[in-house]
Length: 214
Image 1: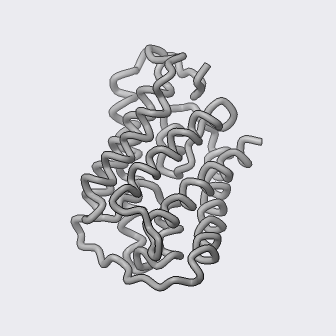
Image 2: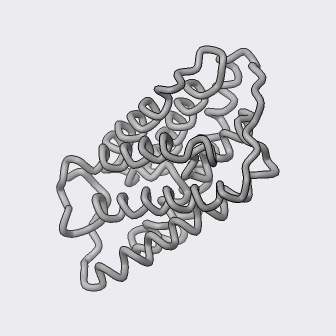
């Protein structure tokens, strides 16, 4: 079921991104609030089953943390991307095939994506996998609000994906271009690796704990 949960969580995350960002009837400037909220709620809903990653970059960070197997890493990637793709087509259906002008990104987008993917993965590892914070009730809000803050901070620079699955969905919905997709891969996965290295350096003697609210 953990792969199903990763599919469901990623589906609703990308669905919310598309429905609130894509016009007509978008929710801007409140889209980041909706996106951060659905992420937090889905993490609370699925954290005890799958860890509530909904993001290949987060899964990579948790793998490097030693809390996800290589086999699960690959299957999580698949579930997350499939969820994102189906969500994107659902948005396109709901929006009636609405057309939009995609963002054309500069190289600054890579740095913006790196910074806030680092922040996201850093928060995930510290609030949801550290022994010192085990059993807390705020992990979902901490993670959701990190995405919310990042969306407001650098949304106009990179589109604020912080998540390769979201980047796939955004490209399918024509919010960003496929020619810029590599920027998300580089920024997101580099941010995940950096966050995991930082966390592991600070928790060398910490016994890993399950990513859960319990």
